Every structure is written in C-alpha cells, then in structure tokens.
Image (cartoon, rainbow over all chains, first blue to last red; front, side):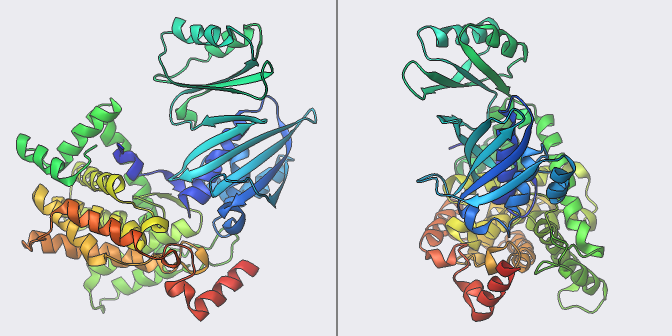
Amino acid sequence: MIVSIFEVAGPIMVGPSSSHTAGAARLSRLAALFLDQPFTHVSFGLHGSFARTYAGHGTDLALVAGVLGIRQEDEDMKRAFQIAQERGITYDFYPTDLGDAHENSVAISFTLQDGSVTRIVGSSVGGGRVLITNVDGIETEVTLDFPTLLVIYEDRPGMLSRICAELAYANINIGVLKCGRKTKGGIACSVIETDSAIPKDIQTALTRLLGVKSALILNPSEA
Amino acid sequence: MYSHFKSMLEVCQQHDWPLWKAICAEETELTGKSEENTFERMELRYQIMRRSAEIALENPLPGHTGAPTLITGSAHAHNSYAASGCTLCGPILNKVMARALSCSEANASMGRVCAMPTAGSCGIVPAVMVTLEEELQLPRRKVLEALIIASGVGSVITQNATVSGAEGGCQAECGAAAAMAAAAAVYLKGGTPDQSLSAASHALINVMGLVCDPIAGLVQVPCAQRNASQAINALVSADLALAGMPVLIPHDEVLEAMYRTGKSLPSTLRETALGGIAGTRTGQEIARRVHDS
C-alpha cells in the first residue's frame, strides 16, 4: 500500500467526522451528478452506523448538503435544510438494511421532475473516500479517485469496443474497466477509470453511438 | 511513500538530505507532480489549520443546531487562562492547548478543519505548528517543510498500523498525530532526521494503550482534552529526542507495538462509546440526554 502525504494531511472538510460528515456529503453530491434532470424530492435510506449515529455527526445535514451540490469543505453545510427549503426540495430519512453493505452506507432515491425515480447506493469508506455500488439496480464500483467514465448502453456485441475506441482516439489510457448488466441482452453499465482527465466532448461522441443510453464523465477535480 | 521509517532514514543518510526532502522526493515520484506543487497543496492545508486553531479562541462555537456542544467555550476559557500569567505550564504550552481545543471545537461545530491525520485528532499538529511558527519566528517555508515531515510520518503509520480510533484506540488516532507533530517540531528546532523519528517514537510510547471512549459517540469529550494533551506530548517527546534520550527500540518496531496494542484492545474501548469514560454512569446518562434531544 502506498499512501500519499495528502491522504494524511487532509481532507479539508467540515467536521466532525471524515466518514460520517465529509464522506456522506461527498457521496450524495456524487450521486446527484448521475441525474440527467433536476429532482424535487430525495429520500435517504440509512444503513448500519449511518442509521445509528447520523444525528450526532450531522450526517443528515451532510447528505442533504451533498445533493444540493454543497461541497464537503463548505461551512454552508450547516444550513443545508434551510437551503433545501429555499430551493423547494423536500427530503426524508428512514432506517434500512442493505444486507452486507459497508457500515456507513446509504440508498439515495431521487424523485425527478418527470416523476421517475433514480436510486443510487453507496458507502463512505473512511477518510472521506466513497464508493458508489449501485446505480438504478446495476451493480457497479465508482470511487472517483481517478477520472471516470460511466456509460449505460444496450448489452450486445461490439458496444464496449466502440466505447473504448472513443478513448483511444483521444489518446486516453484506460486504467481499470468494469462492466456489468442487469440481465443478458438488457441494459449494461461500464465504469472506466483512466490515467488522464477525460475531455467533455467524449461524452457527446459516446451518446451519438447507437445503443448508448447515457454517458457521464466525472473528473476527480469535481469530486 | 516509504513503507518503513528505516528506509526513510537510509535515503536521508545516502543523499545527506533533510527528512522533508526525502519525503518530498517520494511524493513527487508517486504523484508525478512537482515539488512546488506539493508545497502549494500543503500551504492550502496549513491555511485551514491556522484558521481552525484560532477561530474558537475568542468566540465560543455552538453546535450545528445552535445549542452548545459538550465542549463549546473550552478554547476561549483556556485562551484566557493562558494569558492570565498564572498557570503551571506557562503561557506557551497553554497557548498550544488552547489552539488544540479551538480546532476540536471548530470540528464539533461543523466548522472547516483539515484532517491531520483525522478530524478527531485535527488539533494536535496545527496547535504545535502555529505556536512554534510564532514563538520561533520561523519563515513559512520552514513550517511547510515540517508539515511534509509530519505527513510522511503519518503515511508510514497508516501503512503499517492504523490512525483510526475505531481500529486502534486513541493511541492510534491522537497518538499518530502526536508522533507526526513531534517529528515536525524537532525539525523546526534544528534536530536531525533521526531525532525527528525518535521524537515520533517517544510520542507513541508515551501514549501507548490509550483507549478511544467518546461520550455519546460524539467527537467531543474526551477528544478535545486529548487533542490538548497530545499536543503537549508532541512537544515533550520532541524535547526528549533533542536532549538525546535514546528510544532503545527501533522506530518500526515501536510502530508495530502500537498496532498490536491497538488490535488487542477490546471493542468496548475502540470508539463504540461503551467503555472508558463513555461507559461511566454519567457518560451513559449524557449519551441518553444527547440522543433524546
């Protein structure tokens, strides 16, 4: 294991807990990046230690702050409930059991403007680091420690090679690639971590590909 | 980053480098970024540390609900006491304590801090660094070099042991911060790389076995006073090393001992709020009150 000195000196964050406050805010902010339209309501299913100790660590404020786009180091986090009200966004919390998920896990269900619901599950795994494990029923592993491309597409031959070709044209090297799907021939999801930042025009190029439902670029600078 | 203290020291000896240079070289190798970039990133963190070390000295910070936390006002009270001219440890050590309390208070109030190495222990390194910068009238560059040393020491601790109270008790969390601050303090006072690491070892030895027992599971009591006392442990350990007190046990073995000690602590004494001061009748009653409100 190699640990950078900035994993020791940091993160810069709003207290009191890197996993229960900073990680929670970052997790829900990243979850909101997956949405393709505004949301009106958000529901947080709290699992494990998140369910037991959320109030004392401000986990509830942090989660609401995150979906509003408030960063983990922004002291506006304290005012998250008020800001949500100002923006006309409602929220609720309920305890849930996500099975053998990490102790600090949450299932975030966004009710979107068109009435549909997007559900994202993730964990705050310590020191402010996060892991998104499920996007709308598709198992995945997004950490956002590296530039990441998330593509949702029809599960059929040749799709992955066409997606990767777009990265090859831009001279971007793939570090890690994970693909999964709900059902054979159904909807597939690939998470691609790269060695360098991914330009936004790749997103446009990918969504033009036949069979690609959506493409999302997440660079750590935004994370 | 170096996996052991021994290899860190060997590189210093080989190139006749100060400790920060050896750590910085590894960091630039790891990230591919320049040395200047490392200093810039550290400067940004130090600004946050400075702010948190001062913010509660004059104004008590309430919790996020507006009600006082269990430690609201402690930094202000200690700061006034430090300035009173009538203390046992003197104005400088008491200022260190007040600054450590300020960071803890900021953290408990959902204020901005820099984890160093964690949020719970975020007062120790800043209290020592800010006070030494002021007292020894040091240039900022020198303080940043010391912070690189502190972080390099923290990296070795993270790789071989843990800095999490839930895993290794307070000796791991605030203990790691004390070891980091001790190594940095030695450098600021002109000590050698070996003395820096000896100070880190003294700090870990001085706190070995300390349990993590937060009342009501909150990062407040006894975390705040442990930030204050471990900041002082860092300075005591730095002085022990500078005076030439031998450690006898190699630094990497001290670290190993800390890790094994942490692992052998029962779970009641590792951040579960069931043992130690949290497990007392009154501790449990405070917990009930906090959770009911």
